[in-house]
Amino acid sequence: MLVKKYLGQNFLVNSYVIDYIISHMCIETNDFIFEIGPGKGALTDSIVSKTACCYSLTVLEKDKELIPFLKKKFLKPNIEVLCGDILKFDLNSYLSKWLLSGKVRILGNLPYYISSQILFKLLESRDLIQDQLLMLQKEVADRIIATPKKKEYGKLSVLIQLFYEVEKVIDVTPDKFKPIPKVHSSVIKMSPTDKYVNLVHDKNCLFEVVRRAFSMKRKMIKNCLVNLVSERELQSVGISPTERAQHLPVSKFICLSNLVSTRKFH
Image (cartoon, rainbow, N blue to C red; front, side, top):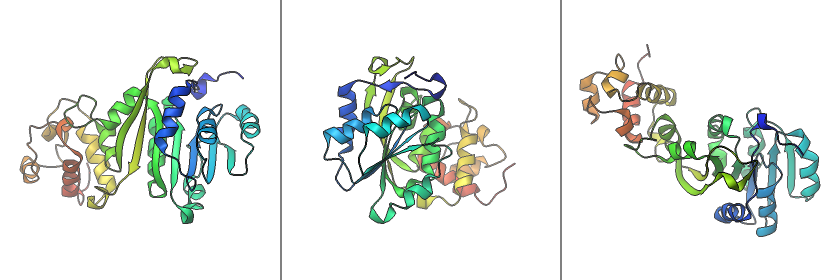
């Protein structure tokens, strides 16, 4: 079975890391699990063999050549193998059918070249999801979990932490995969939270404010948001005009977006 580089295939093969990831999920018998990109089924196999298993497990694999292999390997009534592209898959409709029985848990070793797109795809279904355990490129994971004043803190940090509680589970070195990738990896856990969501007046406005704030690194916030807010308005929400976006917590971006939510962007 040839590895397809254009699909970003790097299969996790280290049994310790595989079992550590699954043990961190603390799977229960009534769980619904949706796995993105199972590959050859390393994580899937650990779920089946190392736990009491779950009520229902669905795996979505883009590589058509892996589908017969997965269907043969996981020939169980509570496991469904689907062929499809997560970015085109109607996730909301599929997950909604499970909603009466509880929220869904997401597991995935994501293709690194489209990981950000998948994260925002999952964001659209956050109300149907209990938590997400995802393998990402370490650089991306570090940006997601970064706190203000850290060099990794940026737009992705703010937009993900607005909707999720995030934590790093484990760092994974390249030698734990076949073929060996050129980058290091990390597994993070993301649990949807309403901590900030109900405070936001206009999500689109918030996204635009965050985008503008981080559009010019090392620039003062007053220059990044020129024509959008005045220095006096920045001060009114407790932000120094000379502050930089990298120093502002999520709560301050909410204050900023609420301030300008009724205005028209230029």
